[in-house]
Length: 96
Image 1 (cartoon, one colour):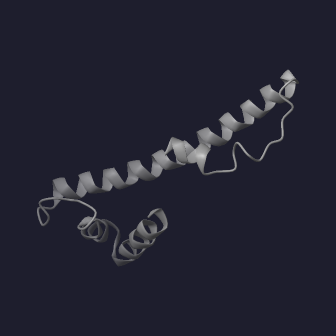
Image 2 (cartoon, rainbow, N blue to C red):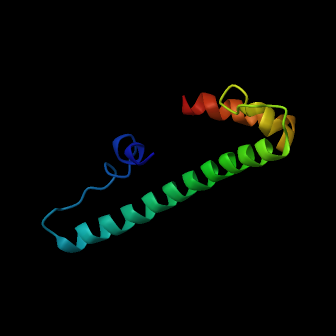
């Protein structure tokens, strides 16, 4: 989530930049863009993997009619095994 990058992280608060020095402002913006881009790309990969797994499971298995947060572990277990259920649960607890 982009708002979490700025409101709840140290990307903005970690740098003490002299606003009058254009070189420092440019450098701070440059590295902030790199850090934000990496964070968003990793988030994209995780979301893509989850949505792709659910889509694949939904097309190839007819055991679950509606995939949602309550039935997600069924799709993950079918695709990756029992350990995926534990990882999914830990991820939900960490996100919530």
